[in-house]
Length: 239
Image (cartoon, rainbow, N blue to C red; front, side):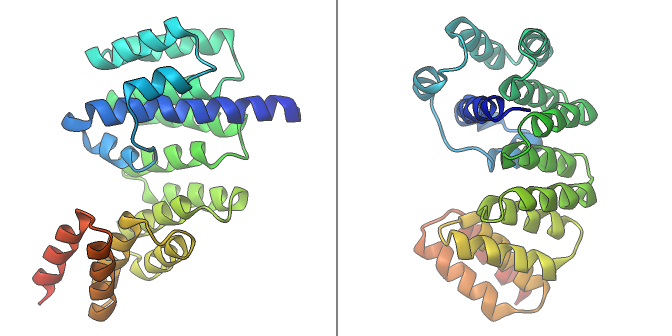
């Protein structure tokens, strides 16, 4: 794939992130477990952000995507994504939208196929790896998620989110020592990551490191994160 095509795909992928950020932020009051898993991957957003920043998606298409998500028409949204992929085969954002729709339908193999295509089109962007790994976790395949995230780290070694998600996947497997190491790497890159502090505290408790768990709680309290309550509860159960 040419450098120009890759650059275009990466630009589009940034726009697609904002598109799904809108969907999660506006409609996550009824989150499924799958939505909650993927919510960690995208920043908060609003409909106004969607309309102002999705420069690569035609206005009519944006309106249709929003309308179908509001209605919960996941079958229609998947078909709409496929129709756009047919006319724009180098589009990572439409594959993200298609994968998102399949997640809501809980068709994990199809969702993985979409996200796998995102990686094929934009192999130097970690976003596709993140979505694929979280889909694999939702499908009960944390071993595959670990492999996917390790591949992502070959692309972007300095990604705190990749390290944090790897910690989550290791935690799913009950491998708390490498989970703690992954959270540690994430926090070295971004000490403001509340989810990574929570994960570190939880893994520390599993490893019998109560002092480290309390340190993580202190950081969560300093950040004024709601996750402090969750970790405080876990610590109390261990006492």
